[in-house]
Length: 170
Image (tube, rainbow, N blue to C red; front, side, top):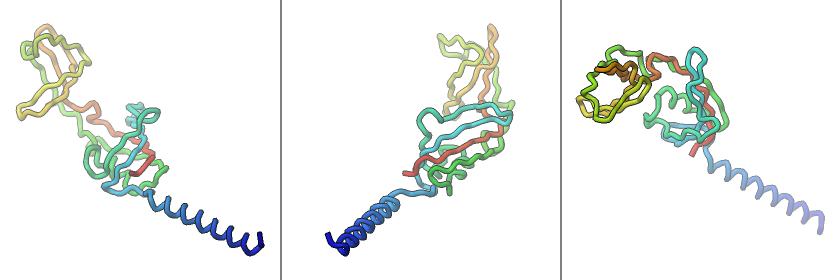
């Protein structure tokens, strides 16, 4: 093969390689925006350093940014992140699940429970409030005639620190 043909073949191969790389980069987003479906791994720790939960080692969390299915500050922290980027944020209790409220602790007569329920401290029960909303409660005390339940989120009153790693933007 002539030297001029070899140079031409190498030049064309280089152009094709550049074009393929350019097109593949155009097909995937690298910066998260509101409305994007993203996959993240996260680790949630409390102010005292206690590990509360993590998605690391299991399926990543998938969410649509801006739909409001998660804490707004969590979603907003992901906007502007690049694939592969990690970030640590702290969300104050007031911006997360609010303060722990004593008015969400109730004592119920055992006769109000559905038949066959024998609650124990730490059990999670489901109830319906006056407006028809489902309420999840935790049993905090049990006596022969009453039970005490707490309808606060387990994270109420807690500042939350999330370590977030953006894995994918769909």
